[in-house]
Image (cartoon, rainbow, N blue to C red; front, top):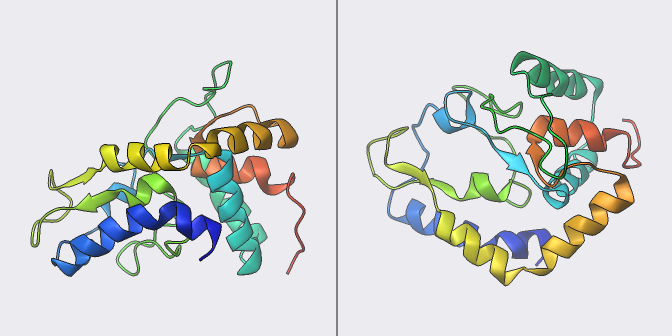
Amino acid sequence: MSKDLTRRRTLIDQLEGLEAQRMSCRGCPGTCCTFEANSMMVTPLEALELIGYLQGARKLLPDLREKLQSTVDRYRLEAKFSGARSYLRKTYTCPFFIEGELGCPLPRSVKPYGCLAFNSHHVELKATEHCFSEVELLRQREELFSEERAENDRLRKELGLAWEKAPIPNALLDLWDKVPHTSP
């Protein structure tokens, strides 16, 4: 099992358990991925795994970069503070969200931890108070993989990143030119 999938295993198991009970995102309009509710931020490690997936899938194309920048501009995600907590948590529509079709095209093996932990807990009602983040499960995952803090600190230093967590489009744009990749 790949390391990125291992780190996500408890979150994926919970998600699959809920799906087995017919509590899934199927039929949901995807409100949690839109500016109405999404303020997802990722760590350097999560962003690096996502960049790696996009490279392997040959999706690091100029139009993706433009979409990421457009998301930053539209939702004014560029606001920064000093120190490790450089980004103000703001809502935005995820640049990977596909309305009315697939929802999120990212495989579970690279989905941000917070996305995997935001689940439906009702068979019929979607995009309501029955969907919520399983914060305790995220805490348990963080404790289980406590070495990630050091790995994220190493990546921040090695790649010259000024953030511990950033909105997905900001994180990917920041890494775009710092991580070697081949153009399609």
